[in-house]
Length: 428
Image: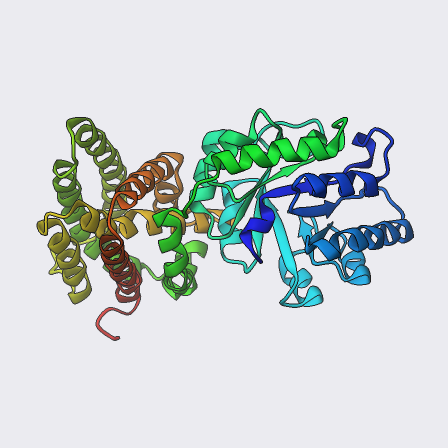
């Protein structure tokens, strides 16, 4: 779907419509600038729901505005709606996609970062980040993300994002500026004296605050997603997640990772020295120190527990990866160096969050590894590094951005190769 269609997303609500027909609300709202409409009817009999959906489709189809049905696959199929929106407690995505087919729009609400990690592995068309702020229109929602949580979710999502919960003329400016592709509005339009005027005002605010380009980190994550999916599907990660990974494989991996993270720590401080001013240098040193201390403590615990001999030679993969990152640092280009160093932190954080969200309830001998990379502290450090990469990329020329992309993708492939070597060793 076209992401611009998500821009001003109306969710209908009859109790909030001041006694006016939903058809009237929708007609006025689209005249004011609404770009997509979700019909939400929690207590409507099926026949009435289908009839209302057909009337809305007659209004929207000539305007090329998608009609999305909330929850009800049967209603979406009956009226040939453009799409379906499902929540965490509704029909699972795979079944919905099988029933609707590949051409229909499917949106999925995510209520936590764990939900978002799962959604990143699905072929949904957009995710609804819910709720951003507390809202009286829904009382069964999770803890609000808040603006800072929304920014982080937008950065982590591989799919277009729609902000849901507490969206009105006072909040949507900062929400759109945070990078979300759309805002889902209920009472700010449905309860307005003039839905058309309310929609027009909201649309103007969106246009004023919408970023003009996609961030570099969002672009590069989408381009590198096939690599990440190969990592998640690797037996090393699958067995690490459920605790069945053979000890000798984990030991082989940690011995190499001990070499790598010591080198990475040195390079992080070299990278700090490359920052353009003292304030940024000090900030990066603190980030590097916090991240390396957490990893170092976890490694020390695991090395003692498993009696790991770390006096080993670097494997071909380890040596190649270190040469890649050090080469970009030695080039003197901050942009190239940041791009080459980023996968080691970002992909580890993503893998940690993924495993944590799929964790086995049974005791896991590698639980400390998962906890370190899924922790709030490590996630926050990663988010700050992502923001810094975007700032650097925003000031770079198209040629440098392309070189950053190459540096990142090579490093991401090394991340896969690192776990692959840990699992198979020299028997590749």
